[in-house]
Length: 553
Image (cartoon, rainbow, N blue to C red; front, side, top):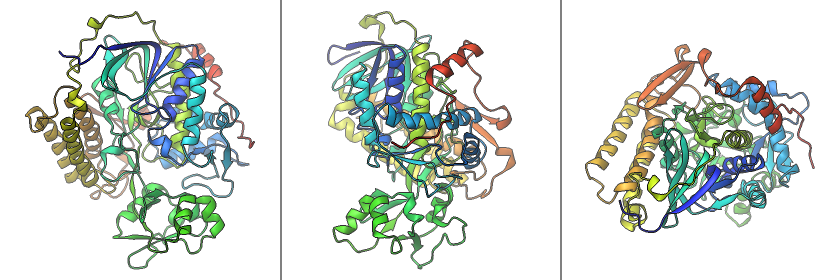
């Protein structure tokens, strides 16, 4: 095996893979628990991933009459009752203190939407961070993380986990050199699969190979069939997301016939995302009408659209739904444990909290709540690492870096990815058919076979492993979807347009086997090593159980 340059070795109590909000919050929690922490990210930490380009929206309890119990019911109802109730309870109890922490601990300004309840929420719970963009949070977390001694390894593409009896780190490319991280605990916070769809508002680097890598190392995947599409996306004359609340202040959608196609729904354009996206999908064109929105509301609630119009544009405004969020993912417990020793996960790469459909404001809040929990538990359960010699790292991925970094390899991987994107958008998009999903499963298997048979000669060695992880993440979605013969939440099946009682449960894939677990027996068993008393001490230490309302500063 050829390694192009001398390998770099890094030792830490906790390794965090990722650079977005979940990764940063996990790293901070682990460091504050006393662990030495290394973060490895494809790009600049705090400047990559979906959380950075988001609108910075979180959910918290700050309205009179609201409570964790009310929020719990909303999330379960939105997820069509197949959520992991333990995760939902944790989320609804801890969300408020974690959001408040953004202001009190990290210095982020918070703005509260007190008038409009986000679709699916029975009370106003929307909290905007900073200037209404995710970077306001991630940059504040980045600065804090640096100040407490977390070590950053940026421009570092993690290729694989290191695993013996337990996961003990990872290996990847740091620039054009190999780097090995040895860690007592490893946390994956690499995001979802948005970049595997032809039309998505996710960053280009969110390509799902972290999920494929986790599957390959024994992690179970749940609810992978549920992929959320975002309805409030302007696609002409510019691509940008719109804030939901302009539709509560007069904005409407019309089709090419001039019909307000959401007229028959009680909440009109403020129905939950799954319902609205499906109705949008059925139209040929969707036009945005903002004639009834006051200028000052538009400026405050959708500033980028306001700026576009202020520059003189007065033509058509076209909307279209795009892939937005991976609802399913790695199965975890309330502390991010995956069931694979030494391996934790948090953020969009995980599944269970949202069930069949995520409510607005849930993703970034999930990153805070479960990032903190995973980081704390990973630090507490980390094992001391012995320094290892180069000879101990003997994995098949150590080929020439040209397998990933040459122009030929990059072009071939881009071509392969484009084929995956077309399969996913056409076969596993907003409306699906059983025949289409089964065809997609076969097409994705065929792509893997094509790699083995040399159809992509430029994709060799470690490049082939990355490609297979990307294909595998797509296959997990299509395979799960092909087994769910009903429509539930974000999964819309043309042949079965309604929910079916026999599918009130979760599809869980581990290896090549897939199990259906009814909700009555759903959920991971708690780690037997953590006794009840210790769990209570953990809860007290990381600040769970707080139900205080968010206070404005």
